[in-house]
Image 1 (cartoon, helix red, strand yellow):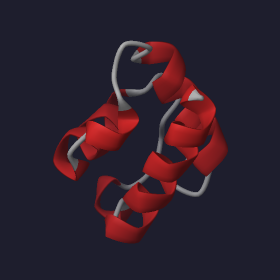
Image 2 (cartoon, rainbow, N blue to C red; image 1 turned 180 degrees about the vertical axis):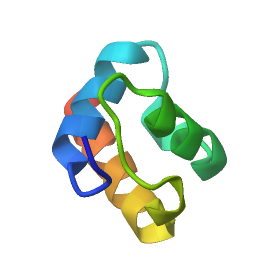
Image 3 (cartoon, one colour; image 1 turned 180 degrees about the horizontal axis):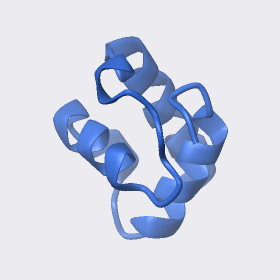
Length: 64
């Protein structure tokens, strides 16, 4: 999984953290949680604010 796999990351986060409100997650925590996902293999520095915003939005949609 790479940073560009927004939907796959959102699905994985939803599965791993079902009790978490994705709208309340700080970007620092989100960044670290993505890095810890099974199958995530990308440069840790590429997860900038715009990517994290897209992941968070997709996660919010997935959690509905």
